Amino acid sequence: MGFTNVASICASAYPRIVREVQWRCCNASNINLSARVNHSLQRQWQGKLHNSTILSLILHHSKLNASRLALVSSSIDAQLLTTCFKVRTTTDASVGGGVEVVERCRLWGSEGSGPIFSLGVAPDLDLLITGHAERELMLWRLTDWTSIPGVPLGGHTGWVRTLAIGKKIIISAACNFIKVWELPDFSDATVTNTSSVEHLGDLQLFKGDVLAVAMDDDCIYAATVDGTLHMWIISSTVRKLTMRSINKGISVQAHEGRINSVLVHNGVVISAGHDGCIRVWCKLTLEMKAEVKAAHEGSLVHALTATSNFLFSGGADQLVRIWDPESLASIGEPARLHAAGVRSLSAATSSSMPSSTETMVNSTIWLVSGDAQGEVVLWRLLSK
Image (tube, rainbow, N blue to C red; front, side, top):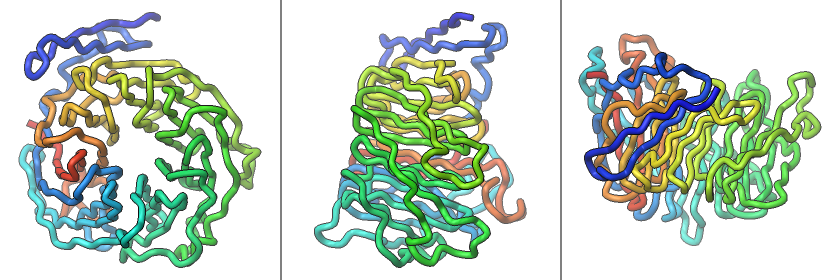
């Protein structure tokens, strides 16, 4: 089946730019463009955390205190910060509950240190993993924000620009190499030393530096500076994971120019690039299922993040936009608070919190965005 074309003109900031959305494998009569339009992002907190471009953000729910949201942020200014928010609860999804900053801490930022380019969380092990300009990974405890003792996970060929974490492995990329690390078994009480993480081997690309990686239990994906999206398949038939368990799959030319962000979501892969497009791909065949051109009205798309039912994007147009993650139909109005391009996003839902609904509504969706001037905005998704 071919594509069904839908063109919509943004009459606000760029009235002459047409956003074109394409679907595959669905009937036009089944596409509800008005679905979930009654949602909007409401600012809960805004502040300048860093003195330069935000490189990576992680929004994490505290296991020790259900009313706490923890934000980890890194920047070109070489600082790694945690900002903890106390959430004022509400049972009404149409109004914001509000937050207040209750704790701030600098984890990293000694004189002469380089930036931390990438962040990730292994929640079952209560671990924060950070990728450094010093060509290494460091491990931190989420419970008290202390570093895990031992030798940093090194051997990278350059800056660790991106990393991703699955149930069993970590992948970290520098230049055209992807390192594969095995996490300890989740039945282990705690990770007490970095030696608990074993280096299994490397995946190498013949050309194109890796700018973004993503993974799930079955596949590894890497997006490169030349616009190519690569896939490896993780064998499910072996008991002991080795590099022989990971087999090269398909590669496709996904974007014109560099790919800035890639994620795996509900059985599909979603990518965003310098060409201003967001595209959805079949997880196993990398066949394109949907795309939106000029997603940010012709500006670069820098960042993606998603929850179960919503995809968020941040662009050089200083806006945060909401999409349906399957059809890429636009949801609600863009959120405009940043004074510089949005460079990083992270989302969390209250359903991931370990407490009961007495302290938090299960449907609450939180989003954090960081821009090129070091400013961060914490949002709550509201239904009107």
